[in-house]
Image (cartoon, rainbow, N blue to C red; front, top):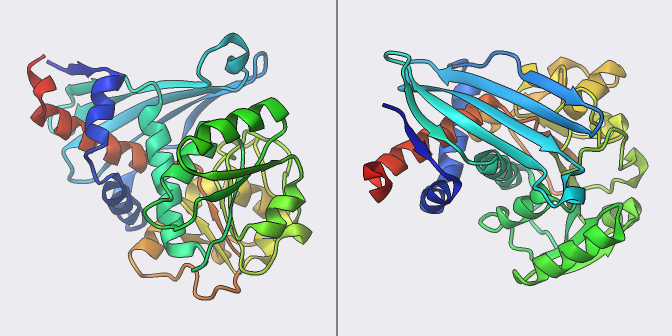
Length: 322
């Protein structure tokens, strides 16, 4: 009989896991062709604005397969609700039976996304970071920064946002965690001062122009996870020395890469997949003078890996008897 786990139970075991190792292994397996990931299921809403993603798949010759549903409704703050929700269903590959229901309220999606940003920075960030630029003041604007700690020795943040209220809240909350926060509504101020930049917004129009990017800059673009969203001027990717996709196949139809391909500014052959970089088969950053971009659209193998790890940890915990 499937076990059902609540958010607080899930959080207790996630804190004890080396999530980065599981996600790295997943990206490697994906780039080796050992993962079956069907196209993303997706619903886009206009009033109010939001989207729902259904991501699912399995690693060949593994124990489980996963189905994840995650929603993002970006005006929920107006009614004092979180902007995201979701769950993951984990099934046995042996018999198809449901093994666990992880009622994570999108927490595992947020963790695996932030961990992907950490992994990218490990291989692609410049060696010296004096200030981290963050576009977006929501959940990922915070978690991406927190999860950089193991790989980036920097606590100075410049945050960009559209709303002064959201920037003030971000500054207050992040300063409590020990960060030094400067805020701005001017994208050029971020690109001028920061060589590591994270974009974490649901924007449908570019926030950064190619002419604003300085040599030696790395951008982790993770907000553009549908065919409508876009955070970067396509010419940024055209001029970049290295462009990495979490999934080349997926980035053909969504994310910054898809917009740049549609504009005819790069070719599919110009792209490198993250799993190849992690495995050492392709190079990420090789010089602090390079401009590099990673396009993270979110791949089901991340959900598979974190769900498996959490499921096994929960079975070994005291929750197994509940």
